[in-house]
Length: 174
Image 1 (cartoon, rainbow, N blue to C red):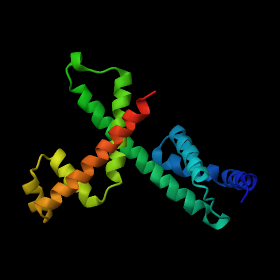
Image 2 (image 1 turned 180 degrees about the vertical axis):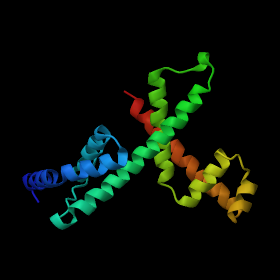
Image 3 (image 1 turned 90 degrees about the horizontal axis):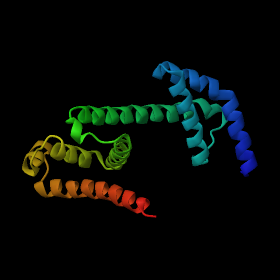
Image 4 (image 1 turned 135 degrees about the vertical axis):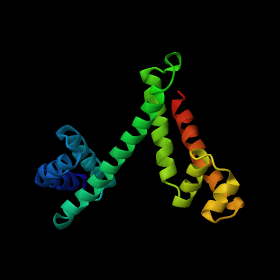
């Protein structure tokens, strides 16, 4: 398919389904502006993937993309709210600037995305260790796995976090 043909297919897809998708998202989000943002994001995903659905699959395809975007938005809001709640409990002299807050939130979102890319068991072990403060032995007992496996999973999760930080450091270089 040529670029011109692809553009034409996307144009037709947009003209035929934008209104329907916007209404569907508006009902779920309760906000026309957020719905419009996600409609835009859905079409950007289609263009970047290069997979344009046929007429019979257009709505199911768009709905699948939109559901994923709604989930991503919800997760981002949860992370942002947890971060803002933690900041609100900090004494005023240690409060950070809006720029530092935005950068920290971006790092948190990237780390969450990296952890989401790991197998479920690895994620569970990492969360039990870091957020519930369980020892490796306690995690192994709770999960029914060996302590060596807990170590292996923690290494995988930690490496994913370090990879995010290394990527951020590399992108910050001039």
